[in-house]
Length: 223
Ligand code: G6P
Ligand code: MG
Image (cartoon, rainbow, N blue to C red; front, side):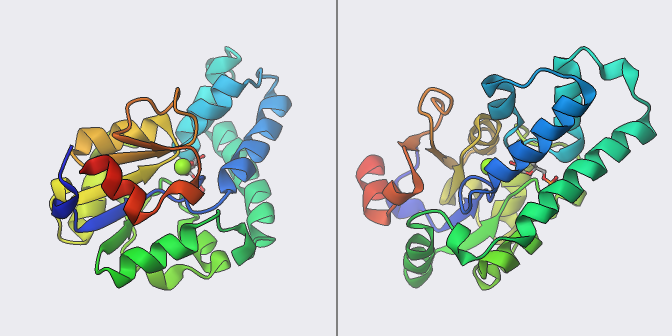
């Protein structure tokens, strides 16, 4: 693990880290799973975190042995329907949907001069940030349309560091998804996993929830 004094920036995941939208994604995917007749499970739900829209649909179809049953056009229609349902939930969001402690943490790291970027697989990230009134914190956002591979590939976290002109070793990546922690680690950044320690066992630092994530707590674990 890097030394705390080497850290110059933070690369953030969005869904499940900054806000509780992972619940909305799950809700909307669950509807798709029910519609196609694929079994829904906690494992599937956790496995979908951090995974792009079309790859998520493929995982759901695979869980129901249905991969060959849908044409490309039908798959796009299902993914579009999911997104429409997801956006209905996003539309109701306010800054109250920011997870505990996140606003203070963002203010704290910003006032200490750390650089910030966003590494979310979501094409809806700018809209979600707008609803949360957090847009000004993230002038640098990785555009998922420019990626050739999604999480767990390191590409998205490497781009997140590049956007703020830092080396990966100078960055901490923050994630709630197993695939995301893998991506951070493969990129050579220090990983913080927020949530279930079993699922996020590969993270350099674990916090049970966002409220525990403070500069002091991070420093203690990296010293
Ligand atoms: C994030 C979420 C995933 C979601 C993905 C794509 O990584 O954790 O659950 O599938 O973004 O989101 P989008 O909004 O583009 O469908
Ligand atoms: Mg996430």
